[in-house]
Image (cartoon, rainbow, N blue to C red; front, side, top):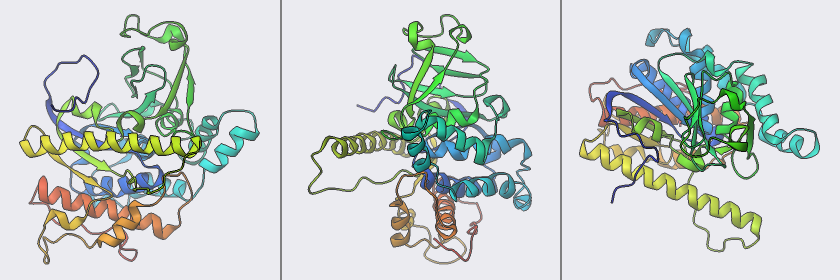
Length: 378
């Protein structure tokens, strides 16, 4: 039986249109997706997107892309004039700063919660006081978190924020920093992220069964990847063409897993995360193969040789030795400072693997791209 990718009672046929999904994975995914978005920009695909859906580390990239959207020309020859200064440089500046360790220390030793300090850091280093109302009208950017109250997806966008069980708030004034902090509230240390809401702001009757009491006074949220690590659901049920960038890490086998409750809980969370991602990926790949959906998938753990592009010549894959890309896939899921070389290798890898996926499975007429950082390689 196929995996059902939605829990909402929305029975609409899919539409023609492009949706892009950016997975979770901390700074590792943030930079990997930056490379992929760079390639989508050059290929002319990004400009035609109808929806960009993200979770966790992917939401950090998506938030900055959304705020910069109206500054972009979408002309490849002008990429150094708009995309790099408006999107790449701010994200790389954040990647040069550790914010999770500072937030954990502040949340434990000082007034305020850990998520309060994460929000403060996002405002300081990336989003300032911008709100969801500063997002463009088109495409629709959807920042996803997981509700610990309802167990459903909580979606943040310019037109509304919504948990289908609790209800909908139209035209939310929520800060981008708060939405991204909720989406990237990795359990257990950065979770939960709590957001105060006004019960009167909810559209009456918009919740399925939980639009009452404390549910509509405070949202208690955790990482969007707990529910959907690929950020797939809100694109999957709407659009026919789907591009998925997966920067999620790999759960390694452990011959002797720890028995204490703290480390065992972390291991259990990793198993759940791995299984959810695997099921969604399987559903996606099967649908792409059958023609039910168009588009393609690429992952940080992909072997670029698996695309079977020519071994040499202008149609060959960009150089990305599997040993090198595997090393990048094992970078810890943290919001921890990365040196410039590691940043550039992650961006290059996201660019290279998306280039191969696009040319193999979506548009074979695309010219081969060129690594953003030639000296750093993958």
